[in-house]
Length: 92
Image 1 (cartoon, helix red, strand yellow):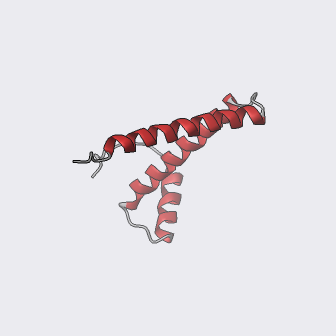
Image 2 (cartoon, rainbow, N blue to C red):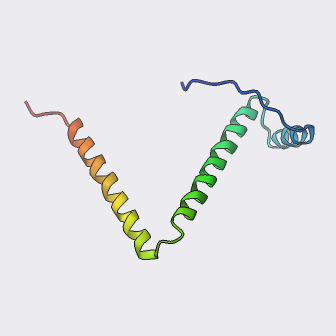
Image 3 (cartoon, rainbow, N blue to C red):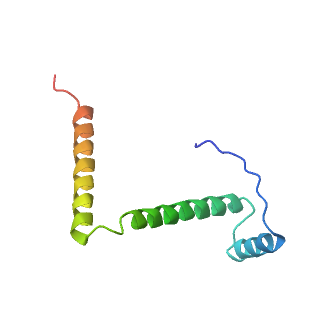
């Protein structure tokens, strides 16, 4: 089980009421509030990271971007292959 960290956050009363109302309409329970917030934070981090990457690569041509992606994919595949080779049992 993953370690859980307790947060203390402040939100407006309107946000609290609308979120709890929404969760209630979805049949979610009180404990689901933490899960909802965690998913929302993860989605926001992903969205902001994607926006930063798009901004950083805005000046690249389509070919240049495809070349970078191809290079990264080859690197990941090479690393995965090497890892599987290390984990293979040796013949006796």
